[in-house]
Image 1 (tube, rainbow, N blue to C red):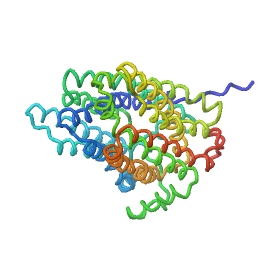
Image 2 (cartoon, one colour; image 1 turned 135 degrees about the vertical axis):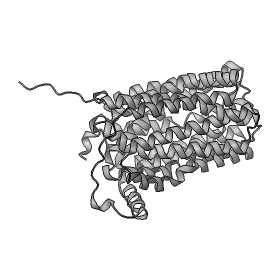
Image 3 (tube, rainbow, N blue to C red; image 1 turned 30 degrees about the vertical axis):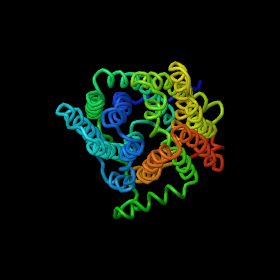
Image 4 (cartoon, rainbow, N blue to C red; image 1 turned 60 degrees about the vertical axis):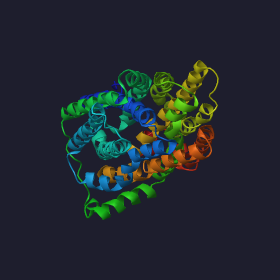
Length: 418
């Protein structure tokens, strides 16, 4: 008699649970900062749309150097230690804002410096993440693991904005940032408890100078049709959504006249879509295939920006419309992220994960500062509502990258034979 096949899930690895706990705590802290940092600039420092655009751009600016960081990280065997250092760096930087606030010394240049340094920590963490992730999860559980991590991220988008908005309203924005700093400390402690895995053996072709390793990472990324299509798609959609995201808090606060608490409620309620998307992603993927699910997500992610641009009427109607648009967008981003992340993890060679992640991030995340700056410029030049509508319509076009590639025909990771 043949024994029934055992389903392999992310929970099969006890080490993954510790990683999941660390990421979950950190995600909840991040949601508070995403509300508090721009509100601090807008309400306390009277930042203009252009200055808010610069602030957002600076957060993502360090990703332009991801290709160099990734090549360096590939040489290091202590990926977990690098992630811990990145967490502690971001905690220390964030604490500087409430400390300055207590002495009435908060300035826009300091806010810009905090944005850059937290971005540096995020780049370091992100380049070490792929190799550490694959050491915790078997390949057949990539979609399941990404679904669980995305479910936590979605849950943070539900509670985080509401909690963040309330904390900002009660404690002021700088003091609310302490919560995110503590979440990074907790993440570092949990990562410290996970044993450092043995690094995979590198083939001889991976040795050499940093410049050579960077070239190898870029070559591997651009020659693979799946990776190239995923890069083009995510870069396009990130560029367009960051044109809009830069202005969302400003739009909700000044154009719609909503309070910090109301903004938090609107985005928190809408984020239930992320929970739904993360929970349904594995099931939808099994029904219509990995590639098609990713394409649907790419379309649903930016399209609701057009709906946001139409928000008007009484306060309850504005909150409801923002929440509905955020709900659909959150479903879309989860369907896109979970499947594309699993796909990228599957096709990336083990020996080059750091440098490919670096090259990918340099392009994909490096475009975000440009999107943020253009968003600030367009918001000033043509107005906030038209900018949101243009960004949403242009973002939908990102799906063409996947439609014109092998991705649309991929049903599952197992069917790829890699």
